[in-house]
Image (cartoon, rainbow, N blue to C red; front, side):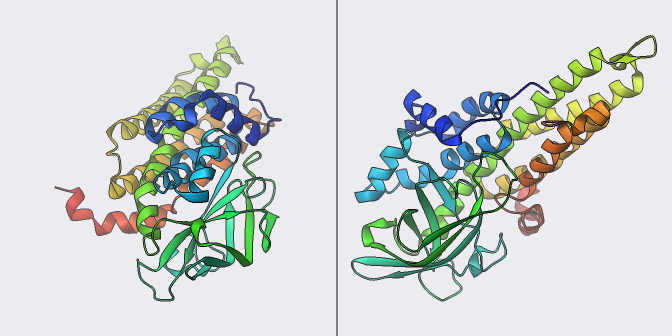
Length: 337
């Protein structure tokens, strides 16, 4: 495996991207296609995750509602001077069941009060602001949700670490207890929260696919280099037909992931479900093949085995694969046309 920069501050990476001007570009898919291979080659998975969530989802949502303090924060984020967290996964509901989330936003003419909790939030531990999906009406209906931009230094906000996984991503839990803000911290129209999320989550899933493609290519290249150098019999491991067959199967999976990225219909929610499930499965197969081929060295610090464990999040973040499959089945007739 090529040596990554392990001791790195995700905020510093974000600030550097802001200074370069890349965060100000209003084409997140193009930006991610350009950024992800180089970020994956240089930084740990957690740091790439930190950037990916902001570019794919948080920044585009803010850009669409660029007024008052929301607009000011958006400009600061584009400059890289503040970090954003996207807080959708709820403490009171299963991760993929946003209709049952319990975090609330009580709206009045001039204020909004946020109560509740969010779990497993990327950047939670060091973000300056969280874009919080909350319920502003009790009815279990698509129009009962709103986004609120919450300064994480506001009274009533508590952050708790979620553990050591995904180093650099600052993954944590957020609690909101009577967090009172001006009404101008509401992002977009009340009732449009889930619609906005649905529009942007397809981009987040494509971002995951682009990242997975870069990750597959990097790990396969590293594995092949190791096989070319590892002695086996009178030659090296790469000379062995069984080894080459296993490697080729991993390479086929990687090319399948790349093909899915190329054929993705931007903004198509159902297509994003198909891509998400297929990419998560393909990435796991590729990393599994590479771990088997390099053997015990896959368990070294920064090795393929540890990477494979963390990469399991590709089947969870943005909607678990089981929920995606249920949605795909619902649209089977359309997909078969």
